[in-house]
Amino acid sequence: MMRRLALMAGLASACMFVSACASSPGTQASGSGPPVSVSDGCARFQRHQYEVCYAYVVNDTWLARVPYYKFGRDPVLGPPALTRLESRFYGRAQRLVTGQARDWPQHVDVSVPRIRVVGQVAVSANLATATLHTIETWLVRAEPGSTGKPGRVLFAETSMHHTITLDRTPTMLCLGGHCLHKWVVVGIR
Image (tube, rainbow, N blue to C red; front, side, top):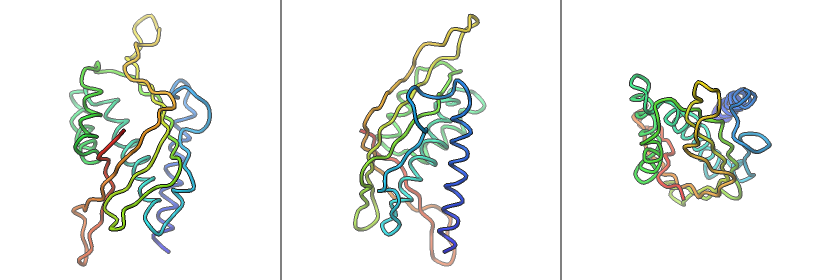
């Protein structure tokens, strides 16, 4: 019961954060509708589908990928942004994200991405891997110059379908023989 209450409080906090960001003028990726929407597949508790959806949208995207896109080349904020990204994206997925931003300028504008989780969320029988399907819209530009014109587009996707693969990995947080785990992104297609 307490776990469900904590989950709902976390989801409510994330929704308030997303709503606040989405209402900021000039920070939305093109398109209409809310920045995040999820399918009924995310509303399942018995196979940890809700954890998978929350992990990808909030922990992996909002709290790791977006900050890395925004600050990854900054001499002060870049190292912590990279550390966070490396803790949430492994292998091919990590190389994809870091490769996208490798040649970007230090200062960029990252619009609020739109992420829709669609269909069922598949979790393996041993709870070790999961797959979800998304439709995502992203817009990253170089910061505007002195003329005020929008900067050049560095990365853009509009309603792009992705298959996201995640692995369940243990964390270092253990108590009484039980260790917490996290879902990390290992594949983006």
